[in-house]
Length: 185
Image (cartoon, rainbow, N blue to C red; front, side, top):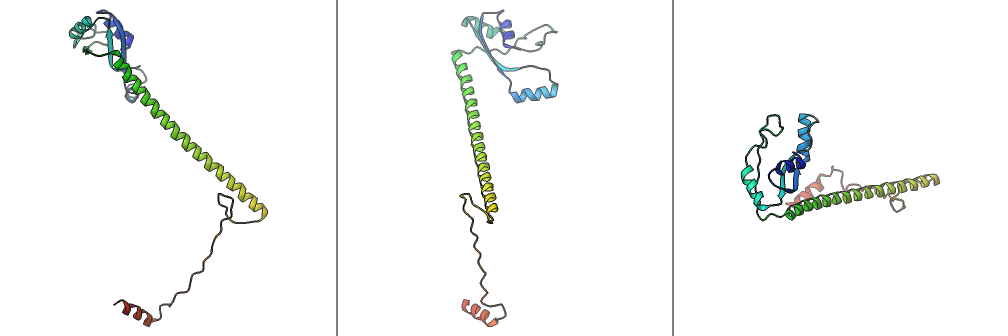
């Protein structure tokens, strides 16, 4: 049922000033459309209606609550019941504050995600540029005839070669083992 339909149905009883309906969750809607085909527009979970007169609003809430929306069998809302409650001390600004707060939270999450994506993109671009610079440096070194890897600063990486020292004994000297083991005991 759309907001205009709700307004039309309730305006038979009293003057309706505002109507606000909350749409169903997009994931629920997607699942419903997948199961039942592509047909089916927006559906609403809950809603608020503001009426010009408090007295009439209270009376309508009491009389229409748990009554059928329509008694005609061909009506798509046949079998559905009104679930209406009068909310004392409720201001329309409470509802708009909630909607505005949810919108701000959603926008903040989107901003954070965009900043994270920009940071990742900048880091990736910087690494690509550094890689290109290193490739050009190595290419110039090859052209000059020099070999060897290059680090980010353009300096040649120095590789140190260390010779392994010869062992003190080759394992055939049993007396050295005995002396070592004897010192431990």
